Length: 244
Image (cartoon, rainbow, N blue to C red; front, side, top):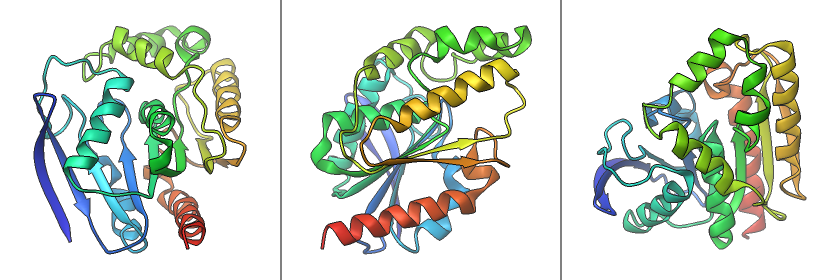
C-alpha cells in the first residue's frame, strides 16, 4: 500500500511516500542534488517485493515546500530523522544515497547509528571533489557543474555539506559503494580522481565492498536498475538474517 503525505518539519512542508508491504526492512532513499523522489521509479516496483520503501523530497525539491531554512546536508539528515518519526516509520533502515544524497545518508548513519543496518552509496559525492576533481573537468563541464547550484542548496551550502561529512565514518555498518563506469562528462584525469574517491568511500566501513557497473553512468539506478536491485536485495537479506 502506497501512502503519500506532507508534514511540517521545522516550519517546512515536506512530502513523502511510503510503501508499507509488511517486510522486516525499510529502505530509505536519498536522492541526488535537485532530484525528486520520482527518480527512484526504475527500482521502485521490484524493490517493494522484498522491503518497505520510504521516499521523500527535500526542502525546495519536487512536491516539498521551499523555505529559507538551510539546505546543507546536516540539516537534511536532521530533517530526515524528524520526518521518519512523524511518519511512524521504524528501523531497521537500509539507507540508499545517490550522488549528493550520499553525504546525507553518511551523516544520518553517523548521527543515528542505532537506526541504521546498512548503507548503499550510488556514485556518491566525496568531500574533496570540488577542490581536487572539478578543476580537472574541461572548461564547459566545469562551468555547468558550478552553475547548477540554484536548484536546491547553494554552492556555499553544498560546500558546507561536504565539510560537515568530513571525518565521519560508518564503523562496521555494512556498506556497498557502487560506481558507474561510463561517464562521458569526465576527462581521463577527473575520472581517475573520481574512482580514487569511490575507493576511499569504501574505506568508511570495515564491512564494505565496491561494485563497479561498467555500462552505467552517474545515475546507476536508471542505467542498470537490475545491478542496483541485486545489491539491495542481498543487503536486505543480510539485514533480515542479522535481526533474527
